[in-house]
Image 1 (tube, rainbow, N blue to C red):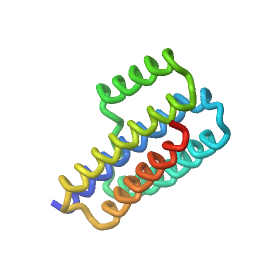
Image 2: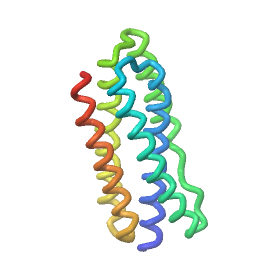
Image 3: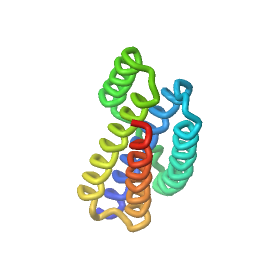
Image 4: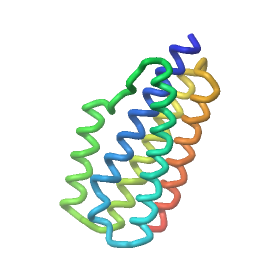
Length: 144
């Protein structure tokens, strides 16, 4: 049970990180404010660090991780495109990023509870990812 929950939790973290990285990459070229751009770049780097840790752990279990669900990815892409077509401001970008972070925190918290038998190292990564998302969400408020 520990190994199964560990793999499932790491997969969900992997999918969440990929979704976060994709979201940042999708909008960063539209960012006007240097501070906002810097925050997003920093967060993308931090996502990459966690992604590498996750992939190292998953490789120990001979698992390749998980991509985000196509429906979730498609809905995120559509929401971003629609909002950006209406208003390409930094405020819109901050709003979209805040929503994404909040959804990530909610999902990751659910998976942390669902896969409670996961090993401590994997739970720690999930908690660090949650804190990263919470931190970015908070930082985005200055740009709303």
